[in-house]
Amino acid sequence: MELTVRVPGSCGEVMQGPWGLITCPVDRFSTVTVRPGSGQLCGGGEKACRALHLALAECGRAALPYDFILTSELPQGKGMASSSADICAVLAAVTTACGQPLSLRRIGRLAASIEPTDGVFYPGLAMVDPEKGEIMRTFLPVPAIPIAVFDAGGTVDTVAFHRSQQGRIKTEALFVRQARQRLLCGISAERLGEAASRSALANQAVLLKPAFPSFLRRARQHACVVGVNAAHSGTVAGVFFRPGTARPQQEAVIDDLSRRFPQWTYYDTVCLCSGGIFIESR
Figure 1 (cartoon, rainbow, N blue to C red):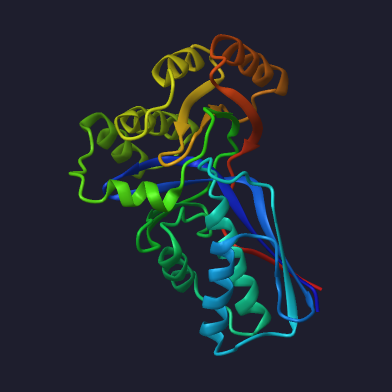
Figure 2 (cartoon, helix red, strand yellow):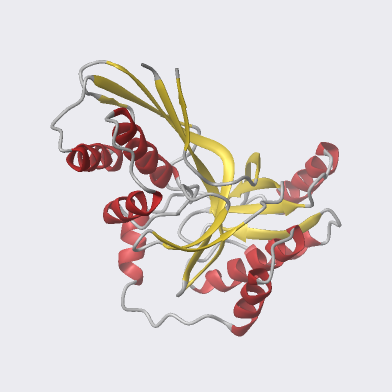
């Protein structure tokens, strides 16, 4: 048996507030390949190792006659859900290989016991409680929005960051709440861009990103841009293009922003996609 399990990462979040977050899954993945072996986890860090042991405990097993090879297209500490994708891919791979696949609800709870989860394992775009791993709402269908990812530099430790925020009085600004309420009425590229931009601006009071308001204003001067989001506990921001925007138009925007804001480094262009756990066996 060979089993492949993929979970997408993210470009930050569409929105985040005291109520939870709305996921922003993109087409870059953590992948676990399962092959006959001696029960080793190859690749990944301490969080993936914890996921392996939690999954084995769920199955009532000390080990399995398989190796689990973890690879990732996602950078660490940037707010692209690398740890969440690793954790959920391992949880799904181990329990599926054992013949005891877990529900998404159980995966969410186990993932959140390791660290606050980005929720990218839920289908569509999902409103989730990152501390509990519970889903509140799903948004479908997902618009195929190209996203140019820019990085402000450095890294953020997700667990330490969330711990530092505990005890804060968390309120949601009126202009953010209004955008979220419009999004709840139905998603479109324009509503996603507006909601993401407002939430990212509000997050400046929590995790400052260099010249972000100016970066956002300049990006939105381009007709093909519907908004800019941010990693609320990371270093990246994503420029949301209208679906169908041609690559030359995207590159013109990327070049303009890179020239005007040298403190922001262009990283990659990805596409908004459905979250989920994608399993293939052969």
